[in-house]
Structures are given as structure tokens and as C-alpha cells.
Amino acid sequence: MSNDLTQTAISKFFEFYKSEVESEVIDDNNVVLSFPVHFSGFHRIEITVTQHSADHFLVSDGAKTIEELRNAGYAVESKFRKRLEAISRVANIRVVDDYLVAESTAASLGSSIQRFLEATKTIGDAYLVQRVSPSREANLRNQVAEFLASQQVPYRTKHTLQGQIEMHQVDFYFPPNGASGLALSVMGNPTRMHAEAWAFKSSDIKQTNRRTEVGVVYDDSEATESSEAILRNIADVSVRSSEIPSLATSLRSIGILKTA
Image (cartoon, rainbow, N blue to C red; front, side, top):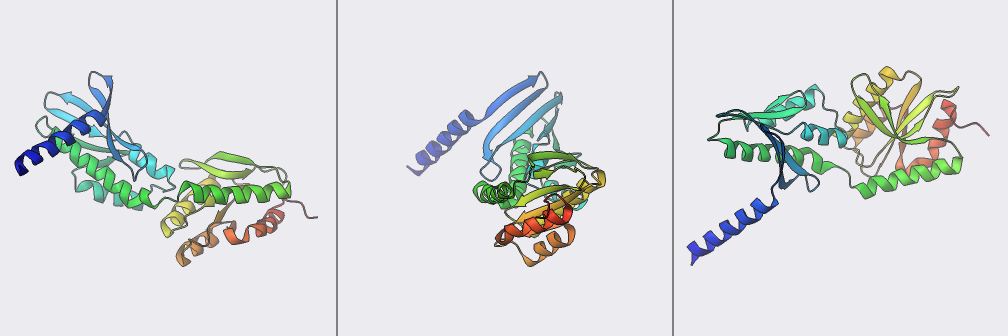
């Protein structure tokens, strides 16, 4: 009976897995496979398999893993990249530019794909699971928007600024207009790592936007002592979520909000 049950369980699992794996043929040598395995419950993991010869294959994530990390607010600079490389190296995966890649023979292609899945899932669980819930961050963003509306000050939302190294999106943007501008972000989960990533973002924005100051409104109920220290020392404007009305003082000092 136990042998029959084992075969039934394995058979049903393979049946389900096979039906859930999606594929998209790019050309004769490239196919994208989408697996029912997720980055911390969010997007499915996708892998590109490239055939270079009869016995030489390349497995890649199409730069999606690092893209997910950037979208989550991480600055993928040298120290962070070294941590990714350490995790990936265990599975014989290399980090090339923004791509995770692994080479494989035809005989080991199945196990190579499985190791690749495990490595990308490990990275996702280690970092992306720490992302703030959309509802909490959206709530804080709405509070800031309501306050700004009460002050009748014009601004842009979801504005993208070119940094020296990469592009950055901010939640609220006050363009320079006689006075300095302000790029203001909302942070609902101000861990030390998120604060460090924001510090990189702030520095990169200011390298190419000399007339724009950079600010952050963060959830002080979630902040640690070290993350608050980073945000307050690096930001031109740093406001706790419990003190949103004090944002008016900063806007006046910059010249965005006129003194009554």
C-alpha cells in the first residue's frame, strides 16, 4: 500500500508541476520557462535556457532577480553584490552584470535548472520577504498626499530622476522653481538595509540634480535606532510618520511652501 501511495503522490506532483510550468520559445536556441515557484509569494520565477551546442547550455534569470531587488528598494552596489555572489556560488551560479548565469551539459541540465531555482528562491526569501506590505506603505503615502493637499502645494507623483549611476523613482517631486526642488520618498519598512539602500539612492540623485534636495517620510513605529540615524544624517528632509505636519517646516525652509 505504501509503495502505491508513494507512486500516486509522485505521479500527481509531476502531473501538477508539468501542467504549471509555462514556456515561451524565443528562437531556435532560447526558451523562457516560468515555474510555479515565487519570489516570496509575489512573481513567478522565470529562467531562460540557451543552447550553444549539443552539450553546452546556459541557464539565466534574464536579470529578473536583481530587477526584483531594485524594485524592492535595494541598491545593488558592491557590498550587496558580493552577498548575492556568495549565495549563488553555492549553486555554481555566477553573477555577470545584472544576470545570474550557470553553465550546464545536456546530462546535468535538469539538476542545473533545479539548483538555479533554489538559488533564486533563496535570494528572494533572504531579501524580498522583508518588503513592506503594499497596504502599509500605500497608507503612509496617502497620509503625506492628504497633508500636501491641505497645504495647497503643487507636486508630481511617481517621478523618475536620473542619477549618476541609475534611474530612481520618488513618490513626490517638487521641481526647482526659483527655490530648490525636493525629491521625497515614503518608507514604510525602514530597516537598516532599506535605510542604507535609500542613502545610496539619495546620494546618486544629488550627483546629477544639484538644485534638488532629497527627503524621506518613514514609519517611525517600524524604524530601528540605526536606520533612523542613517535617514536623519543623510536626508536633507527626514520626517517621522507620527510627525507629518512638521513637513511644512522643511518645505518652508527650502522655499517650496511660502511663509504665511
